[in-house]
Image (tube, rainbow, N blue to C red; front, side, top):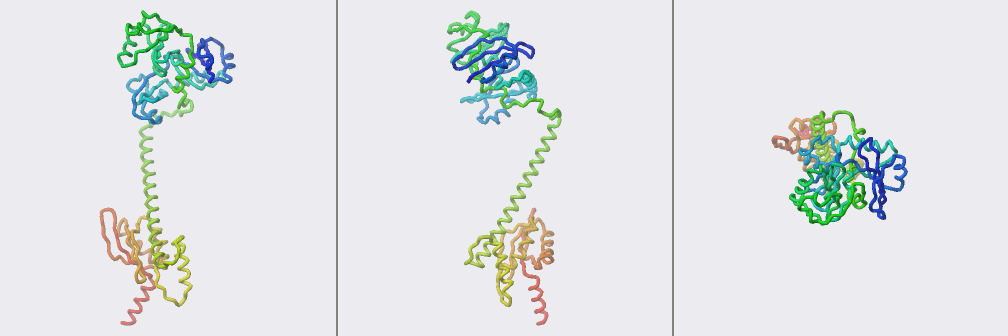
Length: 408
């Protein structure tokens, strides 16, 4: 992979570039105008290197391998140590095989300004890193490079810091006290005497601040600050933070409504399935030689055949079931748990919200389905009524009453 490193020290500063690849692992930064740099982008991945002071590098230990969960957790884990509100900051993370999560942090508007700078020059960036992470560093070693009054210290592929030269011994000693492995080699432009005593016996290799390093840069690309970044210009100008409590409450209400709807839908599906199973059971017992494909449809067909069998007396539950089924579908708040047939009567075990609902069901059965509904028994609990309903044809019952009266 061919890299074009563009180093900027400010929005108004003259940019510098370096060209790196597998055959050219090191290059010196060269000042140039934007026209020349734009011509060098062809066929290369563009890495924008921002001032170290604009980006913070740190790490956290969060027991998760899920990147989405980490991105949500990291800002809150670091909130107390940050000078700015986490809503104003962009976080980029990378987790290697260990549980340590490396974090790069930048102000959103600052990153946006630098991206606009490149966009205005007709250049698109593939990666954004702090200048520190393109600094040469050895395997199993540290890189300590002075640049003007500041010293840039790179401890590994993703870790490092900057500090005043006068504070360098204190910061380096602190790194050793915190359990960091003593480096085997140090890249530096300092003299050994300028390093803490604990590091003065370690071999050094001279490097300067004007050098770019291909392995150093490619090894840090996973901490790309463009990862997951959304320009603040694409976000609404509404102050969503002030509306946060309302939005949270609205989300909870919406989630509850969806949950209730899902529960009701699932309940209705279960009731429908239960009714179909009951119909299928009666159909199978009534017509044992018939193959069940669509029990309700088959029963309707059998009912039509029965109605066409004029002058024949047939003891079958199908006519009653065909009459009561449309009514049951209208009463979705009443649950059918059992169905039996005997002597031209259907016995239904039903659960209802209350007795009033059962009375309404009885009236509709007589009016809409010409069925007589008798409550054989009922049991009332705190939240429902379980009743045994006996359903028979209204016309048949009327005929029986008339016949009985004639005999009297």
